[in-house]
Length: 112
Length: 115
Image (cartoon, rainbow over all chains, first blue to last red; front, side, top):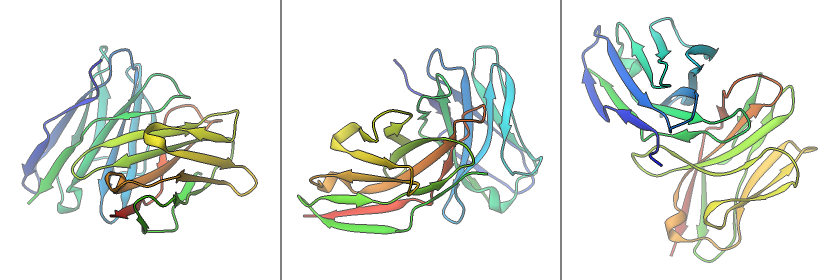
């Protein structure tokens, strides 16, 4: 069974631009979560989608948004990029609420 | 609110010796607890989980962890460390009484196993 797939693996963007990251969960998993990992702040929860609905949201500004499609694939968007948005963005999928989350390899975003 | 503390930024151990990576948590309800490992430039890899039942849980690669409700701890252990165990380890908690799969992670502990 294929794992969680994130594309692209690496991105370089300029301040003020916007970016869209993609995540394909493990087949059959309906819950998709996004996390931001930085050296200073560690791993922080962005949001979670379940059956195309946002179920939880972390403490991030409105520039960070996401969505989930009917096939459970998810995208996250960051508008008006800032230097501080440079991070590894990780996507995770889960089968049920009491099961482990499986993570993709992440998208490394660099804002210059 | 939920939180996780990993009090050690780094743990050093000699190959063949037992290792312990510490984790304490705080949740308002009952916890689901997880350990993940991260290798350089990679995502997180699941090691083990506590959902309910036995306080001692066994996971991948010979790792185990003990859930201690009174001390709100979930320390990761391995009887005999390998050099290949060197990596970044994260403890995570989810509040069982809240809907959804939001995980709160500790700051991570770097494990260094020396030959």
